[in-house]
Length: 371
Ligand code: OSB
Ligand code: MG
Image (cartoon, rainbow, N blue to C red; front, side):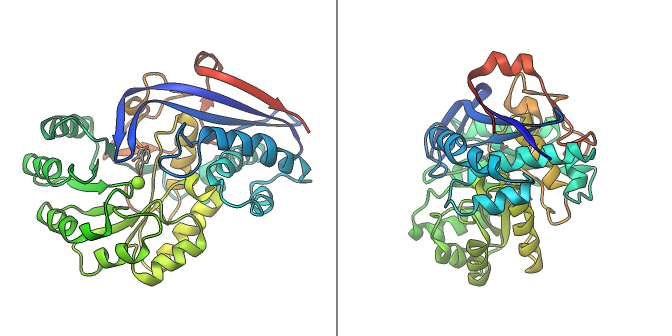
């Protein structure tokens, strides 16, 4: 396969409602899209989930734009056969910048599956036609509003609820949801917001309200703190930000710091690495699930394809398009199916198409690169 062009679009898509985490509020998502076109006209799409400010990780829209424009695209054009694997291997010499790398790698994954005329799920070895999903609920103005929000998601059919928490916003909302819904599966995610000394208190409310999983309460590098929390706990300790590559996963496994693994395609630099990490975790009987970053239909489709592979056994943070956006970039939109699942598209590549009309409406800039 030879490439004809790479286009880098910047898009701003309004969210249906603000999404608040321990590190900030988002009202709209501003992100990059990579459009890779082969000589024969076949097109593959990838999404970059870095946000305007480096709050979730050190990458931002601006750093990813520079990385993709000035380093990754030139590197890609120098490859004789630009497969996703060849690209990842070559891009490895640049440190970090995994969200930028993932945007390019996923575009090549879509493109190469389309060239081969098969779905991305099939290309990755997917074993499921529907993937179990849940919903991630942002920090709300009050515990009452949290309960109401959760109620609406349960009514819509979501089977597990992840509540965003932070110091001062944990036992109260979690307890309120548990009292209203005694039987639902509750996960929480703190995005590194707690000091190491908070372990005892986290354990107390998580066990009291039968939380099934506590995600990334401590800092990215705090492997020992996560291991301490996991020891003897009735809930799983999930790592998100801490695991970015195989060595960080090895250290976390050896320390007993990870009893559930959130795999985000963007955080680990692409689908290839994401799949490998989940396989490695499964060898130690650590279950994996696909995490989300409020992706548009493009990134969501990549995530759904990954979630269809064997090592992903827990429900993903992948909700229907209408939970995020009034008008998604892709067609058809993702809709919630029976038993809290999303259907895995079976068409070529990611199996959904970018609607150029919607893209143009929300696009703020566009730049095309040629070999
Ligand atoms: O930590 O999982 C996270 C969104 C932005 C940044 C970090 C996270 C999230 C989510 C969103 O939880 C989940 C989704 O896309 O549905
Ligand atoms: Mg998380």
